[in-house]
Length: 407
Image (cartoon, rainbow, N blue to C red; front, side, top):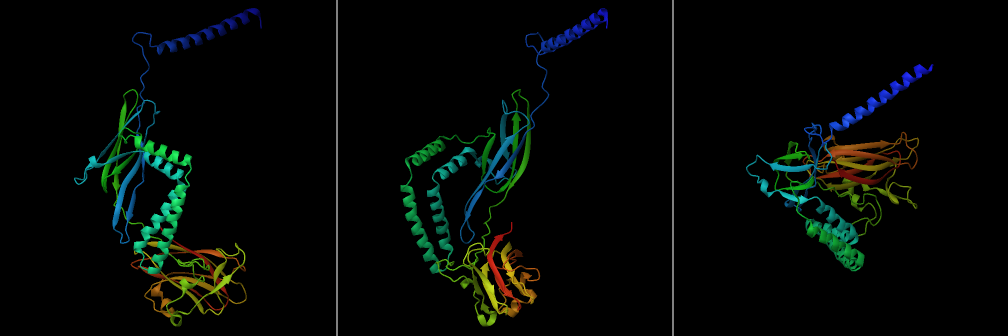
């Protein structure tokens, strides 16, 4: 390359650099507020509001399912596509129902339940004992068996002694923490329609329209509105109680029981003799505890327990089973039976079998339990029978029954 060509290229590169710098200066001058009649480029991006909510309602019912109290509280969280800096929120709630007065809606500061939970955490031992007392005292009026009432009342008396001891054992640090949190609650401002996060306490069930307006720091705004239906509080479906569900000694309410007392039929002549107990000396051998229900290979033993259910509810019954392998076929069956059945023969009629599951020994391994589940509907029944049977041929065992309400 000769000297002349090099100089031309150098000059061109210099000129390009100069043009680039000039362009940057020109762009900078376009956004300078010092120039007359020239300002920031207009921002065409406006807010895009949205919100989410969750049900934090609570309710309480008595033994006859009469409503004692109900709070229809919903936690609302507002948002938008903009940064929070300079963004304002404005909630509105209306209803077309003439029986609803939206002026009665309670606006609750979102920090209130957080502070209340913080107190519970700081005073965990006292709160836990008091909670147990409340649970038992709530159940006592519902219990009709005087023996069970006496045991429950004794538990309450013992828990109250433990409660007094726990209250006396609070440390100065714990007392100071609780006092500080209580002071924060007392100083907490009420919730506002301008809060980004807020709890609305609706006065009653019904249909409401919840609107949200979001305004940015340039004054641009947009709104969104959605309807919400608040349903009447209903009693929680209670989970049925299965007595001696793990077949352990001393598992009855009063500390007695041989693991099978809850499973004895009203008449052994009509239903058969109760099953035997299989015991192990080490934990972990059986699915639960040290004992399981044992059904000898003659097929003459049964387990019978009637439990309360809620009409219309659906339940899931789970349990563990095993049938000893061998040359002879054997099986074991768990059935849900209509309480209209008066004996074992009637319980085996298809009309009285609500649901059942049979497991056999065609592919079993000695002492290895399998987990089983039966789903059944209560229909219009207020109770059902859990019936445990096995066919002649091989020993079978059952353990660890549990029941839950299918949501």
